[in-house]
Amino acid sequence: MSSKERVLLQGVPHYVVHKTRDGSPIFRTTVDFNYCERQLLELRREYEVEIHAWCLLPGEVHLLITPTGRATEVSRFMKGLSCRTALFFKKIHGEESPWESRFLSTPVQPSQWVLTIMRMIELLPVTRGLVQKINQYAHSSLRMRCEKTQTSWLDDPEEYLRLGTNRDERRLAYREYLRMGNNPKEVDFIVNAVTRGLVTGSDRFIREVAEKYGERVYGRPRGRPRKSPRQEGESPPGDDSEE
Image (cartoon, rainbow, N blue to C red; front, top):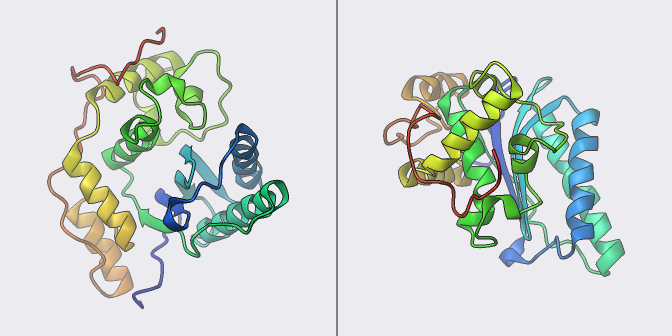
């Protein structure tokens, strides 16, 4: 496996990040954000990809997706999203797309790591300082997942479905998980993995992937994600929405 070859695994979640050059905003107005959101839904239907979580920042797209068909559906999906948003950006703003040429990705072991990355993605608007309250940001999957009035087209992973027997139980359990906040060591490990194209998961899972590719594709994680969404913790920053 060359250093530039992407590690993609069929049927395994992937944390995918696409950034613009120098952080230049590609989503400048609500129209830009809304267009990209519509493309996520359309491309989900077009390709064999499930979308578990998403967040659009002015110069970044963060996704947790699983290719249910061939692993290369991840690349096809991202190429479609990049091309469509680039053409729309040029049409609306009269400028060339600032997207970087390659997206970043890390395969994620189906385990507690999936919930950890979902939480990390949906808390991004707060951790980046774009809003003070998590329910103030409109351009992520959080409202679909946590607000009763929102219609959701998300593909909930098994790890999320096990949080409760119905949507309300899962929603409340996940909100409790959000209250725990991100673990800085876990975030550092995930960011390192996605930036370097490594694998996120246990040593055993990573060794299995490494054996498949014939070389080491990881750095050793520091501990494991915290398991229980029902552990006590601080409320998510400024979360004052109704249960």
